[in-house]
Each structure stands twice: as structure tokens, then as C-alpha cells.
Amino acid sequence: MLERTPHHSGATLNYKELLKVYPRYLGFGFLHTFFSSIGQTFLIALFIPSLREAFSQTATAMGSYYGMLTMMSAGLLFFTGPLIDRVNLRLYSASVGLTVATGCFLLVFAPSFWLALVGLFLVRHGGQALMGHTAFTSMTRYFTLMRGKALGITGLGIACGEAILPVTIALSITHLGWRTSYILLALSCLLLFLPLSLFLVNRNDDIQYPDASQDKDTPQEASTEELNWGRKQLLLHPYFWLILPLTLMPPFLGTGYFFFQKEIAKAKGWSATLFASCFLAYGLSAAMTSFLSGPWVDRLGAKRMLPFTLFPMMLGVWALIGIDSILGGYLFMFFLGVSFGSTGNARNAMWAEVYGRKHLGSIKSFASMVMVFSTALAPPLGGWLLDKGYSMSSILWGTIALTAGATLLAFFAKTPTFPKTPQHL
Image (cartoon, rainbow, N blue to C red):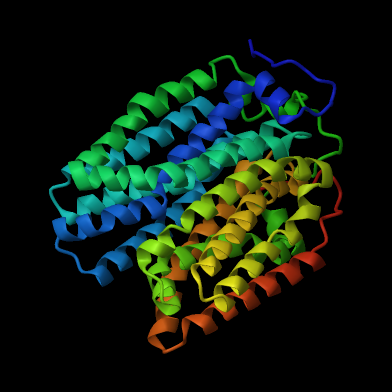
């Protein structure tokens, strides 16, 4: 028999009340976004020099392999992502945790570079692609009227991972070595992530069943009828193509900004260490905005809020270009975090708000696949522009132009108004 949480007659709750009523479900989302850090570039990058040395790889070769693995992960997500629409959530989550742990162990004990690449692929796919996909799909599908707040709490896991893990892992690699550090990450998946995941979603909780939130009212009833479109309807309607560039700008440009942070610092005359200190401003603003933007998503609606979310990022890049002191770096990172925090909440809520929840995993996995492809393209494109002799200032102005264009398209995007029950894929 399914265990249902208390019904609140559609009334919204504040953050404190929401955490009090649904602590396990929100903890489940936070847990997955926090552990997604294991597969993110900002953490893997700390291991890259050690992996290059251990397997005698050049920087160019390692970068090429990493980009290839990222592209392969994006392609596989097209198939593994929609499974969350059909598979028990506890089983799906456990499989993701085991995937990441297996990848970490393979990296440590691989007798050859090619097997190590398999391990890196599992870490990348399970961490970057599937951990966040599990968190945001399950929270978006289960919560409706308070979806923004639920996503705001879930998104804090990303900010906490970015704030805590890089320093922790850097110290671990320095004092214990990269292999021991990866063993510790693998054990954290097996001994922390798996037990907590199974505890936070119990065997009888209805959130773990893909159809539970669709066939019955969730604790927060939807106030409007849902389209419940599949991939075919998504791709045939112009709204997706007009809103897609805006949803891609933060991951695409963010990957480029972070990947070329040393080149940015050099162009501004700062040390790499000094510019790295600006990440604190990014982490704080991203966490703050993720938390504060949740109620605005609930109040205004994700589709209305989304076109406004990239204005802070444009302001931050403008500050980076125009201010030579390190204040420019701090303002850049601060406003970047504001855009990332608000865009993440609005984007994840928008998919369900516009297209419905029945095929949410399929739709989100397709959007995530495109996003991962974009992150793989950012480093080689940035490197090509630098090799062609373009200055960092001109490249940054180009990113402002791209962001402005994506924002303009989003303002012209009109949501679907087709009949409510189209045929699905």
C-alpha cells in the first residue's frame, strides 16, 4: 500500500513548513545534487594532472578524451534518462550511486588507460548526468504549487558541493594521493549515499513510483490542467527551440569561463590563486539565489520568470571586462552565481509547467543531453578562438552578445496552446 504524505488543500507552505512536512523528499533531492559534484568538471579537473601523469598522457590528449567521454555521456542520457519515467525511483537512484562508485574504483585499479577511461565515463555519466537528473526530475514531478521552493532547496546541494568539495579533495590529493581520494569518494557513495537514499525514500512512499504523482493528486495539487506532451510534440512546437538557447547559456558559457579561468586571470593581470578566491562569491550567490528564487518561481511561474534570469550574468561579464581590479572578478562571479541559481530553478520547473509531468524524465533527459553536448563544445571552441588570436576581452564581449540574443529569443517564445491530450511517443 502506498504511503501518502499529508494533503494541504493546495495551500502553499513557506520554506520552514515545507521542510517540516517533507524533510525526507527534500533531503533526497539535496543528497543527489550534492553527490553530483563527483562527476562535475570542477572536481574531476583536480584529478586530471594526476591521471595524465599516471597514464602518460599529454594535456591535449587528455582534454580530447574528456570531451569525447562527455559527448558519449550526453548520447547515452537519451536512453538512460527516460527510464526514470518507468522505473522505481529507489532502484533508479541506487543504480546511479553504484555507477559512480564503480567508476571511481575503476579509475583507481585500472591496469590500462583504456579501462581508466571507462571508469571516468561512469563517473561522468553517473555524476554529472544522472545524479542531477534524478534529483530535479523527482522533485519537479512530485511538487507542483511549491515546485520552486522544492527546487530551491534541492539546488543548494550543488552550491554546497562547489563550496566544500574542491578544497577538501585538493587537500586529500595533496596529503593522501589521488587514488586514495577516489577510493574515499567511492566509499562515500556506498556507505553514505546508498543508505541515505534508501532511507529518505521508503519502500512504500508514493514518490518513488513514476505514475503516483500523475494518476493521483500530489500533496500540492496542480492548479491548471497539464499538456503531458512527449518528445515528438516538444520538438515540433517552436517554443522549445526559442527557449533552448537561453537554457543552454549558463552551462555552455559557465564551462568556458571556468575552463579558461587561468587565461582570464592572466588577461586581467591577476594571479590564478587570486581569481580562484572569487569562487567564494559565486558559491554564496548561487546558493542564496537558488534559495530565494524558489518562491518567485511559485508566485510568478517559471515560464514568465525564465527570460529575465540571464541579465545578471551579462552585468557580471561587463564588470569583468571594465574593471581591472579584483573587484571585477568578484562582481563577475557574484552575478554569475545569481544567474545560475535563478536559471536552474526556473528551467527545471519550466519543463513540467509547460509540458506536464507524465513524460518529464524523457523531456528533461533530452534537454540535458543537449546541455551536456554544449558543455563539451565550450572548451574546444574557446581554445580555437584563443589560438586564432582573439583577445579575452573580445571573446567576453562575444559571450554578452550570445546571452543577449538568447534572452531576446526567450521573450518571443510563446507557450503551447494545443489540445490537452495529444498522442505521445
